[in-house]
Image (cartoon, rainbow over all chains, first blue to last red; front, side, top):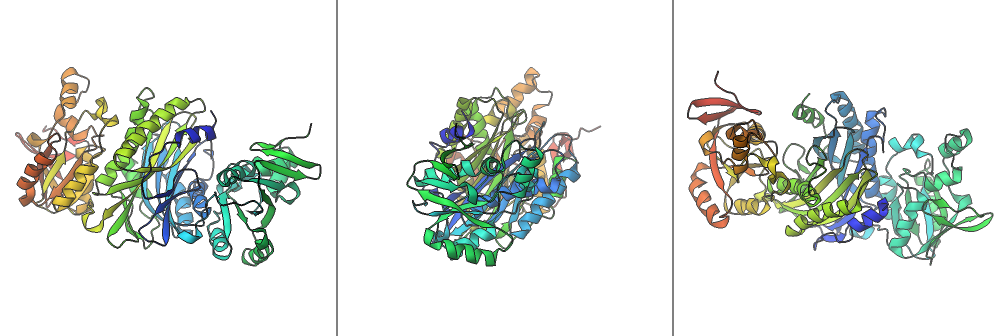
Length: 310
Length: 310
């Protein structure tokens, strides 16, 4: 049983109530608020030593990453993060200054987005540290972007660049909260997700939720300098293209919109966010399945990457 | 640096915003809702294998405990739990059926209180399982009971019985959500907390937040059968009284109310909850500090228990 199969099993029969708009399975849970114009958003996530960060990582960056992942999920709904609560799992022998520095990174990111940290628990975790964060946010009902709204014919857009994130960016990425707000404010987005497991994997979540397929243009993919460098120096055995498709931990936004919006979207984005790329990487198809279009032709794209022609 | 000192350091300079009513340091965070009559409540907590449960524990009970701890914190504000999100940390080699049974316990408790489980993440946790739960709840503004409202002269009340919880109750306790609602509905409670670290320790949180002291009557303490049995059989080296004061994991409610309410409170409780004890265990004093009154006299009570006369 892999992670996705397990999550599917575990979330199959979850309890619900009349306040739930969208339960498990999107970037955040969407809940009725008392305000008839708004939804509440709720999300939790955790980072574990040796899995999501190493013990020798800069402590401030561990705190940054743990909160940043949840803010990225709120961004993927075009929401505003409001409050966060934190549980820090610590071995018996820990340095208080390490935990304080971790919180400093977390607090600095929180302040930048006016997020209040409203609870801090510590628990014993004998072997490894972990940091679990839950974030509460809100979103105007008519601006909330789910994974399930993509339509055949939509253009597929991507912020930033992909691949090689584990070389450093995964600990310092800026969650795309402001970009998502601006996008939802100015354009009718049909579906959106943030990329944590890699484009090849996360794109499928939008497609499955929307019951469509996609065609991705290999030549259009914005491959990061880090991914190219790692391939060149042999630090990674993946080609830059495969790294961009599968490395994960990019925390960029992937979204769809009607193709007629493409020119204005790309133009106005460049004025608004001159230092961040926005790329049209393909289109939504009736599907099912994902194909990668290269100069050699069209090949199926699996969650783990493309299948070489034999 | 012990746990409380660390939490005090970490939570000293947390970011806040205009939506926060009470941040870190009470049972839950209290947040402004859009509804002018209500607050939102937010709380997270985690249980770790080998610390809060053993690998051979009944999986359903682990799920029950993880959610139950958060529901107990919502109860301690007299709030209503609404939604929960869950992160399950799992070693690479886990049995899917174990995780499913854990969720069954969690789901069963959630259903009993109409709590929706609106997100289920899994993360790798190579050595030990952990289960982190965040709960969102709500409370009517004029019913929300903080830790900080105790007044000198108040009577101190306690639900249930104390001590010996680790013998079994810690995995199966029922969070006192209904009891707390009923209490807040019918009586003016001044302060409330749920007991997780033990009466001697958790009582201090109310007293420090309220800037008062307390006198606890040793002869009044409702000592559990488990605590007496463990002392008798030698399973625990603590006297039954010390076990009741310090064992922890009781998840009972400790609250204060004006002394004039005591008789009606105890009488009507007995009719409403005939199977659960409610005991007046002492009174709030101008303080500072906590004393334990025994037949030998009055002695200071530390967070770790009473100090024997030398």
